[in-house]
Length: 141
Image (tube, rainbow, N blue to C red; front, top):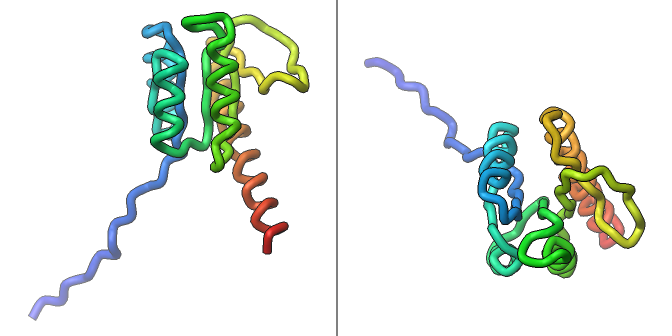
């Protein structure tokens, strides 16, 4: 009689969900490929309206939005809507222009060819969100 080893039940890896919003198809596909290669589950949207719909349907750990899409402030509208969500995703604006971070705007990620830096910034934003969640839970306990 041959003994069989029972395998532990397979658990699916829980990937951090990122919503990527950019009206430029080439940029969106390239960034999506980079983020997925970095180990993230990525949903994408081509407009602020599409992004808002996705935010209302599913929870994300991070929302990355291009600043200027169908209007100059479309990206800020996406970020503002994300910040209203009860699950409080981390948020960032994607831009090709270097800019300073001000208190009334979200943190900025710089699109660049420095992919390790971009992935590091994404990981930092997601881990900061996780730390905030733990802090809130400890305060409530």
